[in-house]
Length: 367
Picture 1 (tube, rainbow, N blue to C red):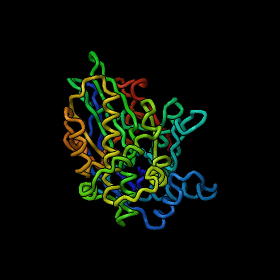
Picture 2 (picture 1 turned 90 degrees about the vertical axis):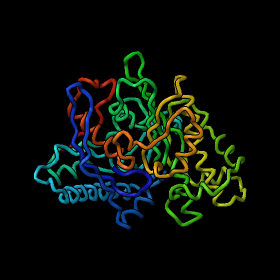
Picture 3 (picture 1 turned 135 degrees about the vertical axis):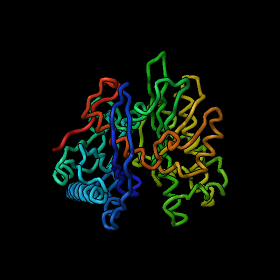
Picture 4 (picture 1 turned 90 degrees about the horizontal axis):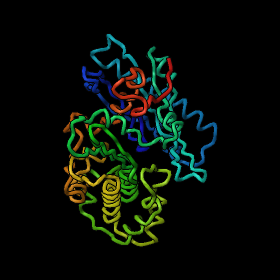
């Protein structure tokens, strides 16, 4: 899979099974992130999350990304010591080209598109490929994002006493709250707002760096209260939960508009953007919870490497222990590849313990 951060193609290799109690189990064999070649990276950056792209460019990018993914998956498998047995299946998320939540459409119809045709991988590896997962989400009347809640439900022990929160800090922040309601596992999920995306854009513009290493720039900055208030006054943050968004909405043009020509020190911009991430998550958690705010928050995604964000989340949610998802055996950098693998596994195995009204069977099949 590949996200809007364009930091590469994430590939994971897993052993998946249902135990005797019908619970999901997994073992990670290997996982890597493959950097995009410079030419492909520039091409993707020029079209990803852009509202206007000509048809020829779009069509060709879909072909190029599909071919690149197929070749890299084949190369990845050839590097393994266990190449005697080909994988039972491959699940491919693709690369998010454009995401349009219902809030951004006059007719309230959500839409999304991921580059990546499963046939390229299926032909290359001669095995079934599950792909186009988010289109089934849209067709089911949902937003197409986030889809991580389905994995979060699979990972949660049904004997929990307090809510468990799974937070993803990617370009956009989103979380799942899983609760035990009289013996029945339930989940609620939402996007919260921008996470790494705006911080990364600010770092690139002002410091020539792709991201804020361990949050050091933010840690040495100062909060600009007026800038923060202006950003939090955006209608997105007042909209009802659950909701969905993306870099099509939260981008550098949005940041500049909220600055209102104020001259801010670059460190203070990064600090204030980081606090927007923290406070939008805090507000969403408090509004989405059922009153019991105790428990654990397991953080994954690139933002889990930003200790400033984790420190501020712990301060903002004092009754919740905010830790990396590594504590439950899910590597914070690799959770999304596990998610895609798990959704493919559910699609193929049809588990009785998780009927379709709990976890829908997502994706098309190429063979």
